[in-house]
Image (cartoon, rainbow, N blue to C red):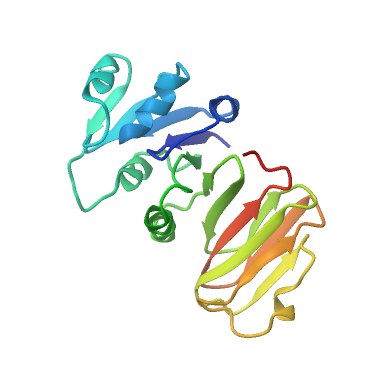
Length: 211
């Protein structure tokens, strides 16, 4: 499946890691000041979108003949929402530099993905972990020893796992917001999380984390 990378505005501390990640992506979209990350690696993005209140105007001007520039001043949409709105619906999406800097931005981005209407995979990724909102069953590859967390955002009737050490019923309770499925070790490279309703934040912290 084709992959679109979105570069958001939070800090990046490892450009070697990001460059390696982008080498597997088919399209690059910069959300406003995320343009500085592409520029730091010498990558020309396919599109640059936002209200442009935080991007360096000289940097934006440098790309005016190199990338598609979309100015959307709508203050009711965040720059990530704007970037997601132009992604090809057939693409998987990986968002970089979107989490880990401010807690309010992190949770805002979870809510954005919760309300994202396109039926596509969207992952928020850092050198240490990846996070996604799922509304149905999901299967992904992981390393044995990684830690997975499952956190209901909307009520889930039935929840089950494969490839994780602990089963959700071990914790008891209803699968509603506040149920805490943190710190579940990966025991198989193929992880399957099945939910029949609702929505959950799924986190995967890598065993070999980069600082």
